[in-house]
Length: 265
Image (cartoon, rainbow, N blue to C red; front, side, top):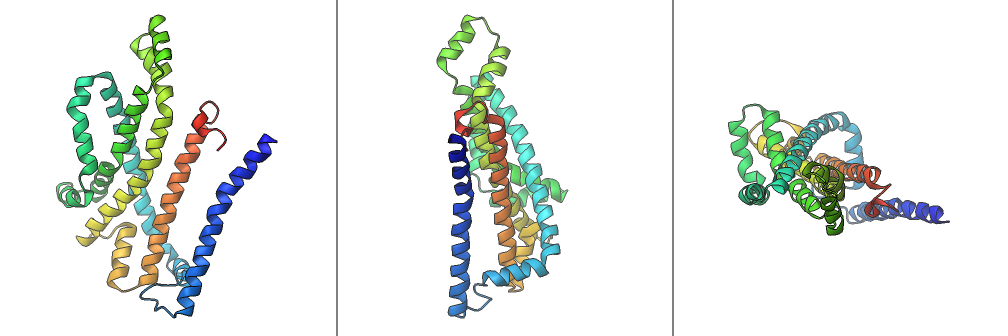
């Protein structure tokens, strides 16, 4: 009976957003049709769908470019974030010295530093990856540090009582305790990587470098091709949702058998 209940809850989690989305699109379509809204102001969902079909190949090619930047930045941020978190936890002096600079990276608008990075780094793809990484890395650092420090005091005393080494405590206690926090950071950072990639592409696009969906949005805006602009935005939104769902699935697969945060999902 519990399994059937879980199945119904899982179905509801998928069905409810789809119903809300369908109602929203129908209202959008109906209002634009009834009020005869010009397509250059707000296109109807049918106009956007038609554009996705007719311009699909070029938009998907641009999406592939943006997705490549996103995945590279997310991977680099994950590696750098985890390494930094381990260093911070092992040495308080390193954390006190460097953690404020990690915060500085988070609060500095990437749109302000992206032009400099694109000028300094001659390879366009690498420049875009660096820009996106700057946006992506902080949640992984902060969440992983929090997880590594959020250890049950009783278990920590038990490890000390059994004379466990620092390495054994790290591998067998701190890392398992940090995994839920780490995956939470990954869910946040996956979306930030996409945002960082798009923002960097906007800066590159304004400089005349054609790449990714952001450039397609710029071109559509210049040409007053609003359905194509909305179609590119829709692809970006769907990609962000897909990234979050992928990270959520990975988290449930890694934690579902032993951690309460992923059970019943």
